[in-house]
Image 1 (tube, rainbow, N blue to C red):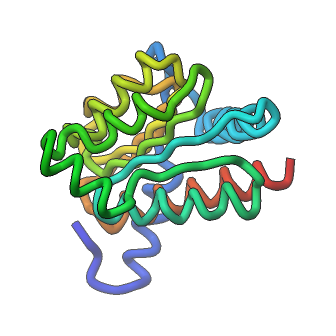
Image 2 (cartoon, one colour; image 1 turned 180 degrees about the vertical axis):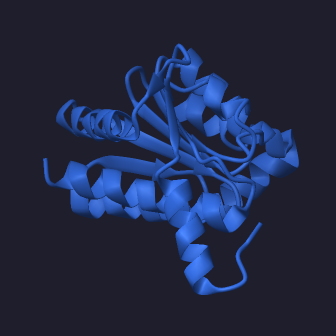
Length: 190
């Protein structure tokens, strides 16, 4: 539940931030520090190998991945793409259903060892899950950021999975943005 005052909000947020759970592709738990460092190394390796990062999210999460794409390109020097260009997005949704809007471009653009980063508060959105499955088929490395329920589908599909233990959008989205800022900033300084 969202706190009634800003002090309570910040206190709850700080507790949630420090409670983020990280798992690897086999479901083994990692510390937050180890997981964050692994994601930084994935970004650095992606840049070093001249591969790209493909990012996907819906709604507020789309705004987060757009911001991350900006930071990765400008500050980190990593080639990064988002799939929020309105004419293409609406054409895909109209012609093939909204569930395909990330699956199709990932299939088209992803190459083996590219990095796919998804942000989904619920971790259950059909288009995100289908995009993750397409990324696996393409041989991509995958990082997921999710929240709400610990058994969400996105969390089961990544090589590195960050789960925010809250069902409040404000906390989950703020935690996702803070984590993304940390990773992109640290990767820029490596």
